[in-house]
Structure formats: structure tokens, C-alpha cells
Length: 70
Image (cartoon, rainbow, N blue to C red; front, side, top):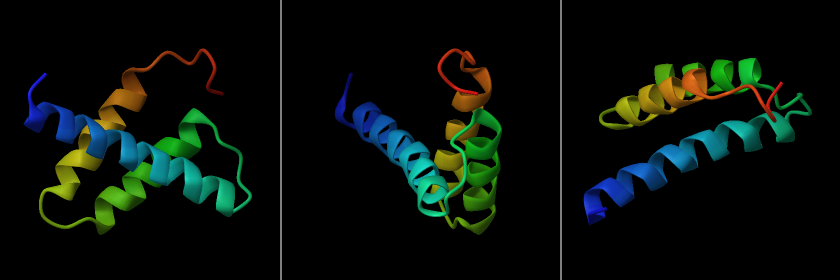
């Protein structure tokens, strides 16, 4: 894994973490659908290359197994 790939992976993980943190702070349940909704909202608000980070995070959450996530 090169530095760019590692950096992109870190950005995607941070985007998902930000969505989860936002849900927790708002007292909402952390479920797959709520994570997706939050990521979609962040994607709409994002500028420049961050939109792609959120789009990729959304794709990864959609493709993930529901095991461990409601």
C-alpha cells in the first residue's frame, strides 16, 4: 500500500467515524441506515475532493455485511 492509498483509506475511515460520532452525540442509534443517512448529508455539504471520500464511504457501508451493524 502506497502513501496515497493509505491516506485515502484513512480519510474514508475518518468520514465513517465522523458519521458515527455525530449520531452518538445526537443520541441517535448507530445503525447501518442512520450511518448512511449521515454520510449522505455530509456528502451534500462537502466541497472539492471530500465529496468523493464520502461517496466512497457510502459505497463501502452499502456493500458491508449487516453482521454487527443493525
